[in-house]
Length: 357
Image (cartoon, rainbow, N blue to C red; front, top):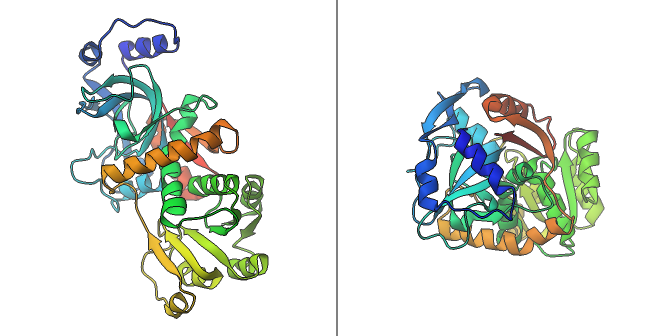
């Protein structure tokens, strides 16, 4: 990071300071290059290497963020392995969420000013010193959290809010089954749903992870290495769960049908055990189940802007009240992104892994 960037960020820490630089002057003063993390070729974590890249240029409705931290997410791992390429026109630098300070704004931006602390959902480019975000996909960094920790919010909050409360129409009093309960998505889903009056059952792979899930609000956490989650769900609820949030896929697809109550909704957001499996669809008909799914990155901007508005309106108050916070497992310097990816691939982490500048 250049000295100007550091000095500017330091000045912004004092909200009483008067700034004389215009947005265009700030753009002219920014360095022309930055340190970012490249995927040199598809492969293991070691293919993530630091490189000099140009500072991205602003469009009319975009903001330039000096990145405090970037969240590591499973899609970043898939992109690194060559399985999840960025959409057309999007940078090949990985990173779908950041937090930081607004350094410059496009001519059409009306919601943000230079110096604002934000977190943002990106289409890519988060593993860098500077990142571009759409105005509509930025949210105010919560005052109750360290700025770096806010980088752990956008991807998981957008995903959980959209899939559980918009797509599956989850309601207070219903039973929710969350697979991968100790993951970033899982810890977010447990807290968010519990705070909204939902009864949560989570699956996880160790006693430690199960204990964390219950501490976060799950009524019951099931160690899938020791207990059949289908039997447990039926015993706990009496008739099955109403909604399933599944990132596992594979043989879990059939098991989810069996764990569900009549007219339940199943949402798939990933397929860690594979997207191809042999399934008997008869339970889908007999129970009148709904099987759906989504991915966030490729959705149109207007869809993501609507999700952002819902998150700000419904989820941000939960953070302010202390009912929800991101669970940070580990923090790595940006240059050690490969170590963060290696940790994620062990599946030993609980919550989120972030990269800090």
